[in-house]
Image (cartoon, rainbow, N blue to C red; front, side, top):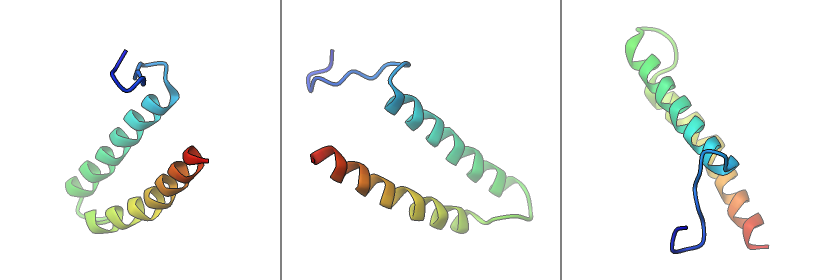
Amino acid sequence: MSPDGYSASWTDPDYVSTVVGVLAAAALYFYSAWVNWGPTTVEITVVLLAVLLPTTLAYEIARRF
């Protein structure tokens, strides 16, 4: 067990969703860099920030209450 009492394992939903999210974002950036059409990396960054920032804030607020 880790020192802070939190253990990450393949069965932990938070861990799995984080890994899947990182891989999905990487796939979007790879696709955008490879093709000459479609969303640019800047557009992908804006969309990811627009989704992840409020989600992260809501998670942290809910975790504290």
